[in-house]
Length: 288
Length: 94
Length: 256
Image 1: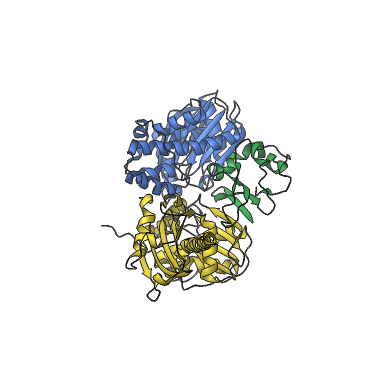
Image 2: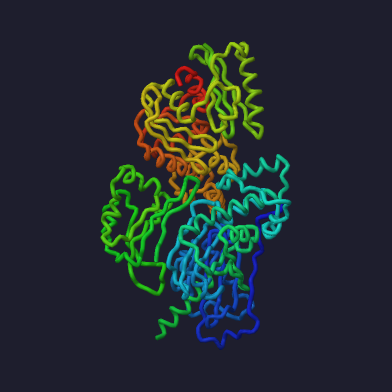
């Protein structure tokens, strides 16, 4: 069977030291994207458990699957959760959600928690979209732009390239720097045409890492043009899967001249995290 | 808050921006658009608030280059939606 | 007078040779990665097929995305000029030409002489070009020649949300997993690409007769979808992929 280079690791995680039974508000957020889905569970606003997996082709079940996996070994069931918020492209398919909220608001709220309230500009590079968001110190959205029409600047674009070059997607960030000198970016923004262009370069004898560098450069540049539309103000942070790709992140930082904040949280859970925080706020509001 | 609706693809950047601090949800812009590009709906970007705002419909959001082309082909004319908005809340990026 | 039209496309090079405006030779080859060398070799082949010698040729016009690379051409013309000229020469009532190549889609309005009135190009984006159809036929595991006929077997209208070829590929796979029949998906794809191209054509405004040229015109499913979308029948010339080369050959040096 052919190795699937585009496949990144799916996993779940649980906080060992929190006893959820003593929590006052247990909220959850489920982010169903077109490529990946995450379920996050908070106990009084602290991250308790989460799961990150591929949405796959069966979107209606993705939310339940992600939630089941997040709940694994916690002793918690859906009934113990006080408020669940669904978000993401597939948010209509979160049957157990009490409310759905747009992922733009959720990412801003999540980033505010994950990176701190100094974040003012947020870039989310998801599986099939790219979002540029300006927010205030409370994580409230003040300006935003989302592009989900074109694969360039999205995770799918990167997956296509990892597959073309037969390189595992989790390694392509570092590999793109293993070049003698930084090449010019590929000229096509379109992933399909960039793929043809890359095939030509490989035939000319370009090593894979160099092609990767050229494509990462083009992707970073494209994303910057979207960011500039909403005005880039520090502090700057990146969420989503591509935040884990140093090849794109470092080139992007270089172009805008600002270093992105780092976090110990998993960047892919930002949407679900923000959703769960909204869940907590809405639960507290309803209890008053 | 500025909400930018639209897209960027190989042919360029096309965005309609609504300033929700200015927009009061009056809906004057909706009927003047010959392509049904705009509608008034809940401000979903601030989940804790309850106001309404003008927005681009999901059906037209990724096609605005073509949907808006009829009005834009008339040179030197102000676009009907921008003309209709007395609060200057609408901006076209192209 | 012997004139040659060379259309160096993103995927295929087409050459037409005319003797006093009558076609005496026609041939094509994949552009590949050595488009320039392949063009020269094809040119020599066409000369040999026509049974003439190089010095008998009075005019060589190049067109297509690689037209500047044809060093031996006497002059070059743009794709839209060539397509409009070729289509109106074949069918004098044509006033709108839809030219869908491997990587570009063009909507052209012209007068009875093939002179351009207005045009729109969908470039740099695979959706709305042959590349989209190819990517989809790969996703459906169908040979491209079977794509069109299969889509004709369906009458369903399944909307496709994705406008990008990369996203559409994922959408096709989801549809397959949901047990949607291939013929219905094939039709959904031709409808999607036709809708995209119709928007572009409406932007320049269309007038009958409408001709569809370029390789994608062979896709009978696409032809049906575009006729439905524009609510008009269209003309498909014989050998639609050669129309631009034909038009180029007709635009000899003195007419430019």
